[in-house]
Image 1 (cartoon, rainbow, N blue to C red):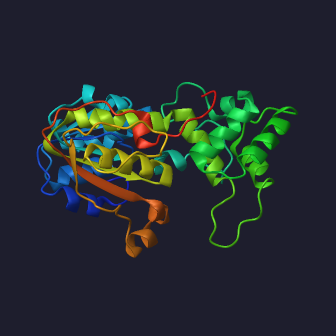
Image 2 (cartoon, one colour; image 1 turned 90 degrees about the horizontal axis):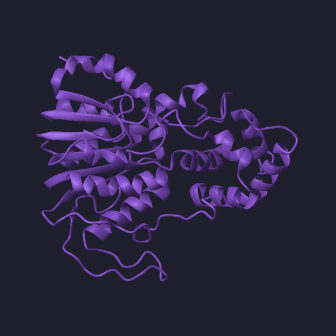
Image 3 (tube, rainbow, N blue to C red; image 1 turned 60 degrees about the vertical axis):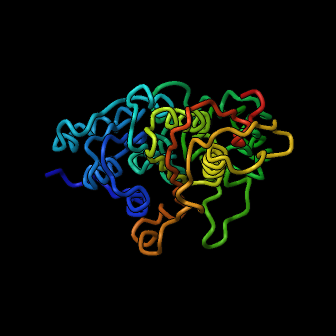
Length: 323
């Protein structure tokens, strides 16, 4: 019935197993190339609302999604606003981070392995990574690299960036990657590229990804019907930690994220955790798609308790000075 999927999303099979049986109305908050939306429709969803901030994703989806007719609704928006586009949902799926569709296009500026403009904007609007790199004070830049990239050499890299931009603007991906590489030891076999953490941090800052995640998780809580599933796929430890703490907190588990966080009065659980531990890819999936290696899936069922706000401090959202 439907056209072939443009790609196979990571952890689709374990996600579908965890939320089975699939039925009713679902929302895919990170449509991308459409793999999760197609998987949900094939698994039995009556309707899927496909949401993405990237106009390119919607442009491509208009082609492959036509075969699904009225069962697929396409919307351009950020997933922090997902409850404006669907309520009483049977499920919400979020696949966080950059998509292969974005990473594989040098002109989008997400990759440190091919040259392109230093952009990184998922929605193709607003300040670029070049704006941040060239205009942010050194101390704040170091905080961004450390808080959003777990980059231990953040101060050294920030100092090198400021020194380089004093000579000429940093406007290309390989230009920035070279600056970062010169600050760090040559990687050993099997280690990630030296610029990985810095590019991750800048991408998160450009797109306010962690703020979006915080707001998106609360929006999903508001949008889900009792018994509805929240399934989130993350690709780095910062995201996974936030999702884990959100689900634990909303399931009535776990203490304070740190001893400085405020005490939170016990409330009726809003979720029941399905995946007691994060689910990763098996060897076959990693062999077929090396980018799946770091993927982690967490799933929880919505209860009938009223939705409510969650403070950023409760789920350990990183803070950046001056940001």
